[in-house]
Image 1 (tube, rainbow, N blue to C red):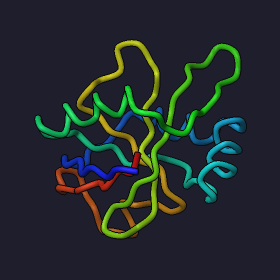
Image 2: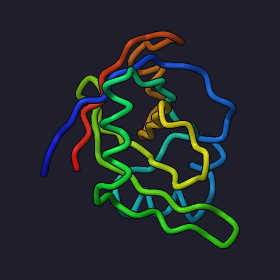
Image 3: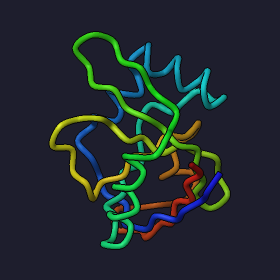
Image 4: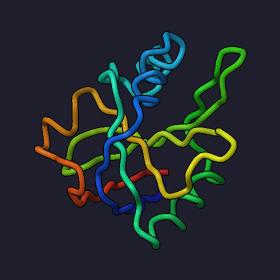
Length: 128
């Protein structure tokens, strides 16, 4: 197993992560494969230049597959941590998905728990 650090700034998303996490098939797989019930939403991070390259490498790395229901795109997840809090990075396999955006799921609201606001700088340690 390898670990890499991705850095960027927190930003408010459009609510798409909430929709993904609340899909029954997605939620069930996160619970089964990562061992936690995901909070209803994701933490959105806009990556810096170096981290964009590392995120691209994750697209080719072997992650934990999230198999989709018909009509939805697949994705993969990687175990991660932010400030020693267990979480997971979601890499959606969606055409045209922004390469500088990282979505993170956890069992709690990371914004609230870690006192993060838009533009807060964070470092995500990803295991793959």
